Length: 453
Image (cartoon, rainbow, N blue to C red; front, side, top):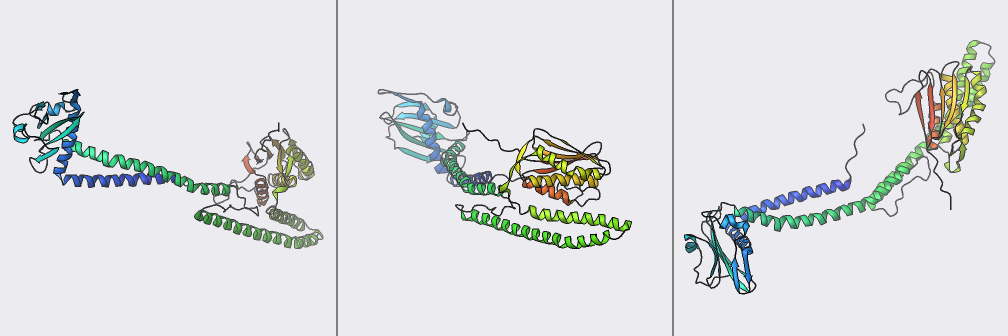
C-alpha cells in the first residue's frame, strides 16, 4: 500500500512551535487574570492611569491660557448624567477647567483649595465591580493639571479595558515578537541542518546497485546524517555482495549443466524414434534456458563506461537480417520499418541480444504463421510486434510489468528488461488489437550538445 508523503519537517516544526507558543500564551493569560483578579485595588490604580491619560487628550495650552474639551471617546462616559462615572479637571490652585460632577465630587474628591498630591486613590467599595475615586497630576507645557475621576458603578466595564490593554502591551506583543524571531531562527536552523539530508537523498536517488563504487559521500556531513549515509553505503555493499554471489551461483549452475545436456543430446540423436526427437527438442529448450542464465549472470558485471553511440535503424536491419532464417524456418515472416535512425549510448551486442530475445519469444510462443515487424522510433525506441496469440496477463503477486507467453519460461523477457535498464530504459508490453503483442524498448533521449561558439 502506498502511503501519502508526510509534511515537510520545517512545516511540522513551525506548527509545533506555534502550538506550544499558543499554549504558553494561554497559560500566561490565565495567570495574569488570576493575579489581577486577586488585587482589585491594583486594577483600580491601572484604571485611574488609563482613564486620566484619555481625559488628558482634551487639554490644550495656548500661551498661559488653558482650555479643555472632553474627548469624543469618553463623551458617553463622562458627559452623560447618571452614567456611574464622574470627572473633574482643575489646576493645582483650584481653577476648574471641566466638571461632570454632582454631590459625588464633594463626597469623593479632594477640596479645591488643597494642593493635591501627584497620585491618590481611595477604594469606595472593596471587590468587584470596581468602585473607586482618585486623582493624578499630568504636566503639559510646564502646566500642572489635576485630573480626578470617581467610578461608582462600572457599567461600561472599564476593568475589561484595563485587562485587555495589559494583556496586549505586556503579553501578546512581546511574546509575538519573540515567537517571530524564535520561529524564524528555528526554520533557518532546520533548513540548514536538513541541507546535508537533502544532498544525501539526491545522491541516494542516483545510486546504481550494479556499480562497484556506488556510495553516498559522508565527508562534511553532521555525525547523525553521516551515520545514516554509512548505513546506506553498507547496505549497498551487502547488496552487491549478494548479487555477486547470486551471479556466481547462477553462472556455475548454467556451466555445470551444459556438458550433461550435450552428452544426453548426442545419445538421443543416435536413437531413431519420434519420442527421442521430442526429447531432443525439449533438451534444446533447456539448453537455451541455460544460455539465458549465463547471459543474465554476465549482465550483472557489465561496465557501462565503454558504451558507444548506437544507431537503432542500423541495429534493427542487422538483427532482422540475422534472425530471418530462424523466423522463416518456423513458418513465420519478419520485416523492418525504420525511422530517422535515432542513436543512443549503449552496447550494440547487448541491444541486439534484447531484440533477438523478443523475436525468439514471438516465434516460439505466438503460434504458427505469424508476421513480426521490428520498428524504430524517435523516442528513441525499438519495438517488436506480432499478430499472434498474445500473452497471459500478470497474476497477483507477479513482479510489476511481468507477463508470460503461453508455454514460455519468461526468462528471456527478464534479460530484455535488464538490458533496457542498463541503457537507462524500460520494456513496455501491450496487446495489439484485434490480436497480437507489441514489446517496446523505450530509452531516455540522448542529452543535447550545445555547439561551441
